[in-house]
Length: 562
Ligand code: HEM
Ligand SMILES: Nc1nc2c(c(=O)[nH]1)N[C@H]1C(S)=C(S)[C@@H](COP(=O)(O)O)O[C@H]1N2
Ligand SMILES: [Mo]
Image (cartoon, rainbow, N blue to C red):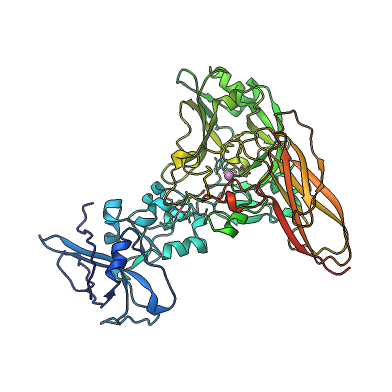
């Protein structure tokens, strides 16, 4: 589409006339408001972030005002600046709640579909200029651009975690106008999550669509193998509905051909292996990072970690069948069947070395805890990469390929990486940090929970501990006084081979709480077989993505009367 609008930055004006073009392209004075501009210094100092912050005290609202006009032959003038509104409108709006925004048609919004023309989107009847948010978007620039010039609704139906207060607040700060009341509403789209499976009602839901939920903390350490309904669920997209009879796994072989394997082929041609492995999301315990400084991302508690006995075939066996050899270099890329409107699929990769290692135990799993893999966990087939961040254990696996580079997926390249606390969204360079693979040593207190009622007498403290890379947890230290004095907890769990300790240890400590105790400040920390320890506080490991929080876990509880 060719656009009749251009943008010109106004500055230093005392008053500004807001005009809007008619569809005929003639200059039309549709509405006239008077504004006093911000001090010119303000405009000069921050031309790149012109959006205003919303302050409910009407007189101090900073507001973006757009004047649009199209001329015949002489081109277009569109004023675009940040103005502090101080005078009343010449033509006051019906509502007294605040000054009106300029009004646009959907066609006009559609003109703003690229960086060069600014990127506008609509949500409900509001119009937003999100150009300055493109690089800051946690979901990536390319994703926002899908909605550029149009409505967010069809996309947010899929990525429905946007319908949260903190996201809507961000959006609100970019508001530049409203849709003309004559514009028909955006037709509603079918719910892409309508086919999602039923879930256990006890799960603590982080976002419903996509479904992200964790078990309540009291449940976590009740079972060494997490019952599948309580296993945490981390989905980026709707759960695909797969017909197991029609299902094929596509494997690119060493000669570049594609092998197509049915579930039957997999089960018949390769030996079955069972691996007990913990899966942990990189965002586990992000809530503690958010409490320090928000990352605007899913606030997982301590439950984005669970353990299962996975049954399936070794990825190594399938790769050897496809002609790959132990010494080969490269990365194994996985693709899931879950996809968005643009056809983007969930994808991730691991080093080929991990996949080919006879002691790596990377599984293509079709069973979980002795039963068919549940839909939420990747039915009919998923990857389980023991010792490695959950993001690489691709569910609903449809394609495996081997190449010299890591997966090009957003979740491999633009997420699940660790940064210094100094790195901001303005300075982040994703190419500088390696993707998270093995994870650091971790532990948490599952009981008592912070809201538990504790009385003097015997107290049992429980929790979990785990480390990545097959490193065994050798010790868990627990303190009831904030870290002044420590005791060793008792560990339980399967003895796994050195270097292949893929599953967590559960731990407990029986302590007696003396009469008169007012408060307990319970702390735990684990040590792994390489003598790695956890950092004591979150501050020095806080990062913009809110990943890899493995600080000492602390639970403060007040002690009641006997
Ligand atoms: C234009 C306004 C938008 C705003 C203000 C916005 C804001 C955000 C925020 C704050 C998050 C982090 C959410 C969280 O983890 O709790 C996020 C994530 C994300 N957004 Fe957006 N977004 C916008 C548009 C879009 C569009 C149009 C799409 C898709 C076409 C999209 C796709 C995503 C994806 C894929 C993620 C990452 C989710 C994940 O980690 O799985 N966003 N966005
Ligand atoms: N296809 C696909 N695979 C995926 C995901 C996804 O959204 N789609 N999420 C990943 C992430 S980030 C994690 S932590 C684990 C979670 O696995 P679970 O839901 O079985 O606990 O799956 C990984 N595999
Ligand atoms: Mo994850």
